[in-house]
Length: 218
Image (tube, rainbow, N blue to C red; front, side):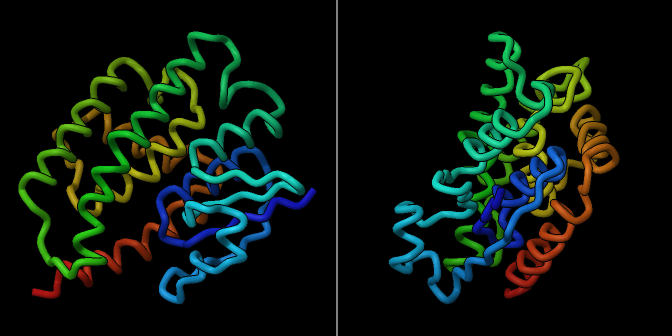
């Protein structure tokens, strides 16, 4: 079995897949995609993924992209049980809702900040963007009320996707002590996720350096 993962170190979606891989005991054949060199727009890469995004996973003759689809696929195919992605309809629906929350709410709010900073030369985060992040934190605080994990009492693939995005947002708009459930969950992820330091923190450190450099350009 060879799992090729086309990746970029500081990408939050990539880090979600790396966390899932660690939890499942999988080894990826990592293939760096240098966006600055436009490698994601090469004919070879566009043949794999016409949306030219990272991460992209190639499992033998099967190719899939979007981190949420990838982690669901990996948990379904390679999980020894259904703990990370439950089969029971209601439990799975909650996990899916949290995955959609990441793709439809959390990550767009991250992108709305980093796109101006890293691609448009902006050096400040707008008040509106900060307010949108705070709203997303508020939603997560409610999701976590009475629960250890974002989809209930067990860690699932939704936690991998959400923590990779939240950890990036925290660099830009710190969670602080205003959201105790969220802060406790974030610490829980760091303490309990297999390989968190290598799978998420190392790439997050790169992201933080890039962001701080952009914010200092005033």
